[in-house]
Image (cartoon, rainbow, N blue to C red; front, side):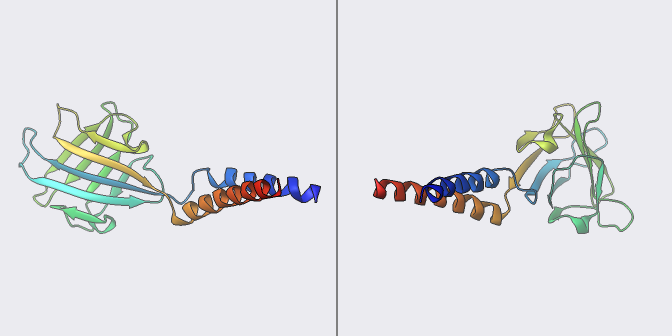
Length: 162
């Protein structure tokens, strides 16, 4: 009885602790919209959404077929529609190739691609907004709730036993 009385709470705490660590299969969602208004730009409004199992950490070219949605993207099997370029001299950059074959560069603060939030591109470049979201895997939420349920169950049982 004593072993059971102490072992069950320890198991529940371990389950809770293991389930509160970040899941490895979280989805990172990048939602972007902007306008090519820099000198030489065509004034075209552009947008895309990209979902990936982890954050963008290196140079990442994406074709229109790899994007969840894309407004005014260049559709080509040779030229990527979007380039993610983290850690440049100016900051994290997105280059967008639109349907009129005009490349637009949007510059965001460093580590934008690694940090959830909403960011605006720098004033010296094209205006644009990037939203970075991390969506946990559903099984991670279920495991967290089961760990919390176990702790609540143990606490209620202890209160009944007295």
